[in-house]
Image (cartoon, rainbow, N blue to C red; front, side, top):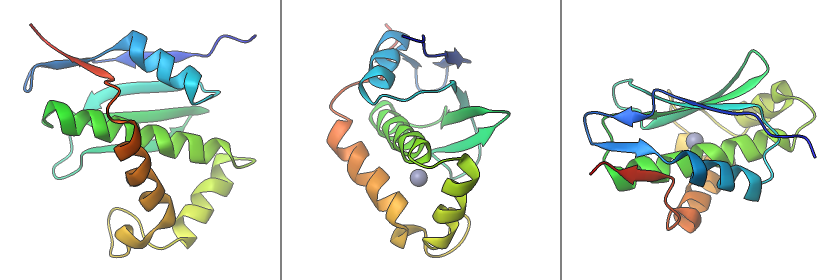
Length: 137
Ligand SMILES: [Zn+2]
């Protein structure tokens, strides 16, 4: 079995004092059968909890380092759902085309009606009891 490539960088929120739990995240990626490669990191953009993009042949997910523990955990599950969605398509380009057709993106109206976003929200609600982050002592 091919080993999945998971890269976790910049992994401690010095603002909210949590960090990515690498082992739990790897387990989640196994469970969701995400092929990868995938990188996960902390970042910051005003007003955005996190984002998913496909860049240089890799899934790239980031979570906003200002988010509280519970919300940040939910955001990470949400973004992982987008990775799962993407891998159902022949190519990421096909996925993003369908995503755009589904009505809007984060920057414009219609985000809440987008079936991919609705699925990701429900998915995050369902899975967020499993923690992918840990609190700093
Ligand atoms: Zn989303």
